Length: 115
Length: 112
Image 1 (cartoon, each protein chain N blue to C red):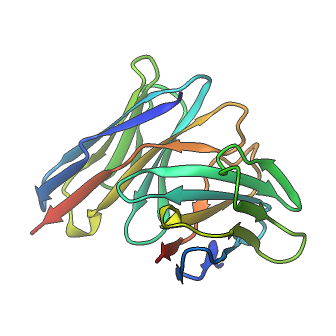
Image 2: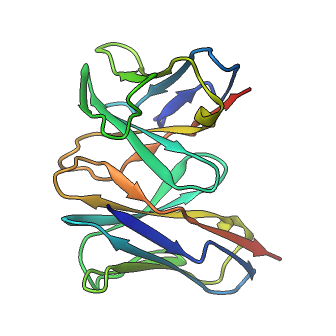
């Protein structure tokens, strides 16, 4: 009965490198959400995906950020050409059904540090 | 713009004390309000409130929603050191799937 699994827990990148964050939802969940938490701030919505579809990306920066949730495998949040301002904790959450299950279950997050 | 404001920002109490955490919100098309507890890892779900005046309880924790005055409170009685955490309030609007708008949280520290 594993929960939402995120890896890596910590990721260090130099400016200009790419960061790939992975999220495996809870078993049976087909809805995935990515949130970002900056120091001393609340979680900010980034993107909501179902299998193979991006449903809502209104919180994603227009450049360098992308997300996918393929038919097989985990959801991936990709940040290209990272900058220091990308340093944050990135949380993934999942739910069984967006319409009937409003409780999101969160993973432990990936702490991204950009040097 | 949707807003969720939590107060106080931080709080230090002694074990055994009772605390009240506040969450006020300004959103259009409100659907539900959720409380999460965040320790060093994943935010864990505490309560979901959709109706005014109905208290939700779980052990020493309880919460209530006032949709007229647009706020919720989270009470913790007989606090323990294990209650030390950041408590997050979030609001969901209708028609937005499960996208949540979070407050910045209240950092609670319970000392011996």
